[in-house]
Image 1 (cartoon, rainbow, N blue to C red):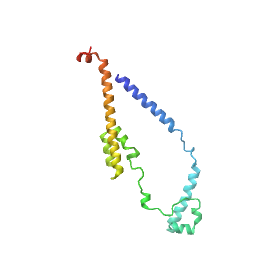
Image 2: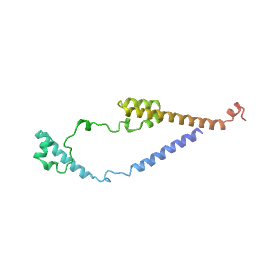
Image 3: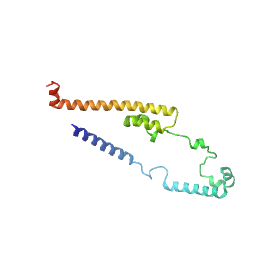
Image 4: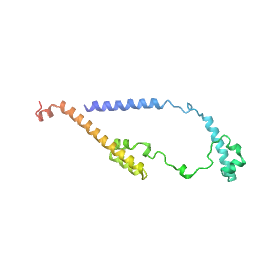
Length: 166
């Protein structure tokens, strides 16, 4: 029975990996709407702007006044604040939802979510989701354990005799 379960899990992992690999391989670097040549040209334009700013010690406004042709095809923000630049996006650990951290890693996953996130409502929500994931994962684990134990008991005659079932 153990070999059957092990074989089934191994087969499931291999097939799941193959399906994932075949889907993720469909995107190639040249298949997007932006080609490598376009990216290279854009980087060269930004390099020219960078050299000019370093040489002249210029800001955006003086660059716009003196050399508007440098900014003709480049989309740059006239002002960028530190708050916008360092604004947090998805604050989840590794971008993984708290429920999955708790479901897969239990209490350790809850601890990871708690320790890696900043204080606030988002942290409370993700830790709560990690708790729910931990509870669900534990219940499913016990259910699988009970099913495997029941399957072994129903097949093993020694266990059946010890409970006077036979």
